[in-house]
Amino acid sequence: MAEIEDEENLLRSVALQNAQSIRLARQRAEDALRESEERYRSLTQAITSVVWTTNAEGRFVDAQPSWSAYTGQTWEELRDFGWAQALHPDDRERVRLLWEAARAARTLYQSDGRVWHAASGTHRHFEARGVPILNADGSVREWVGECLDVEDRKQSEKALRQLAADLSDADRRKNEFLAMLAHELRNPLAPIRNVLQVMRLTGGNRDAVASAVEMLERQVNQIVRLVDDLLDVSRISRGKIQVRRERIELVSAVNHALEAARWLCNSMNHEVNVTLPTQPIYLNADPIRLTQVVGNLLNNACKFTGKGGHVWLTIEQEGGQGVIRVRDSGIGIAADQLPRIFDMFVQVDTSLERSVSGLGIGLTLVKNLVEMHEGTVEVYSAGVGQGSEFVVRLPVMVETPKPLTPEPTVSEPLRTRARRILVVDDNRDSATSLATLLELTGNQTHTANDGVEAVEAAAAFKPDVMLLDIGLPRLNGYEAARQIRGQQWGKNIVMVALTGWGQAEDRRKSKDAGFDAHMVKPVELDALMKLLASLSAKKERELI
Ligand code: ADP
Image (cartoon, rainbow, N blue to C red; front, side):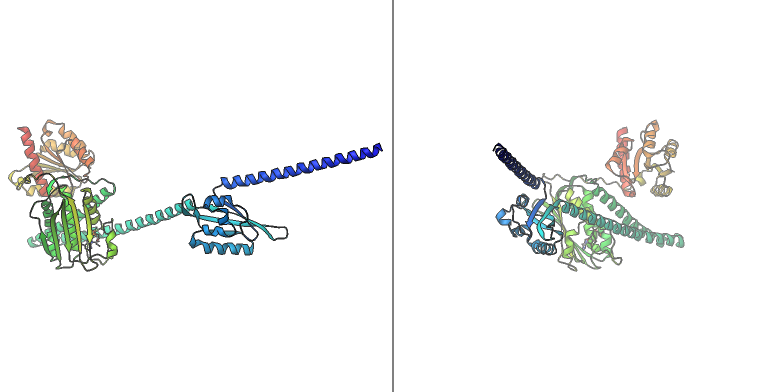
């Protein structure tokens, strides 16, 4: 009896143990499942990409927390195939077809497109991938996949592509510019060479020399203009261009430009109509830069108008603005070219056959210079063959006008007063030709070709004036000037730096070295004469 009882007890305890271990196992399984779900939930919340699962048919049958967080779609909105509504309308059909194809073939699903991003309120680019999970019999149990936000990468790629396009565009424009520059420099050089040949062959025949000189002057002026424009344009791109503003009368600046454009207008047989204001218009402006602006516009009006055309120049005041209008009856500008006409290196016609010269920087200079004076420039043209009009507006000066002090005029100063002039330049041709010019205007000259020679020649020749280049062998111009100024006999010499460098920093350096003035090569004889006359007068006043 007792045995039976023991056996029952044993069975009961085994059953109990079994039940306990089953409960424990179930508990463990439930814990593991909960942990796995929690891990999955945290994972889907932690990663920025969207993770999704569907049933075998490709329907969403469970909540998709990361998809909902990204798109803002509720479970009701996204369930079944509602998720497609979050795609950009233009991408929906393409993505749906890719998904259908992958499901039918039970292979890797890959697509890309734009999906609604609730946080930013925009569509963002994504890349999606999904794989089927298969049962042992090869049938599909479910699909799992992810959508990766690639918007930032797309933007970077776009920016890089744009940069590459800009660089190759800049490279192309640079090459075009260099070709144009070579062409523009060769243009005036060819007649110069021809003229020299003519002079040699005719042996100094008076008529031949006279017309040769005129031509040389024109061609050299053309090169000087080209180089000046180039320097200005390089200063603009480095933000180093300077304007020296003073109170000026607009018409005087315009007149200088008109004078300069006269030859081109005449040679093209254009009729030029000028309308000036009845009252003077005063501006706070740089007269040289303003002349350059009007000069460029007039030059273009002449250049881009066939022979015997019309050019109109009108100056007037409109409210608080001085207005300069340059109009022509020329080739005009097509509407699609108007917006870019002021850009650097832009030329409407860049063909080799084009009949006019230029580098495509004149209008860029005009715009920059006008804007540096707080002004505006606009272009109008009714189209090709319809002529063009450029309108510059500059603020007038508000103060009450004082009478303008006339420019001091110095008439042929070097003829009335001969000077001893020492010309120093390591380019022997430059030194000799300038000395010859100065001799022809009644001066006594001496030349030197390096800094040491300059100091020695100054000591021996005792000049009144020294025209000194800065970049010199052995001893540079600054040092030579310092040494000469250090001597008793060198204190009163009028010293002028003649150099290719004209920046404020270069001018400051030459002033520190003891120069009285700084001129940029090539100098015009007239300007040099005026400068020498005024400097000598100043020195004399100081000596009294
Ligand atoms: P460039 O005259 O050296 O070519 P600009 O910068 O002065 O350079 O002018 C740029 C381009 O604008 C010219 O090549 C020309 O195509 C166009 N343009 C300028 N002025 C006129 C004008 N008055 N009429 C027609 N086209 C013009």
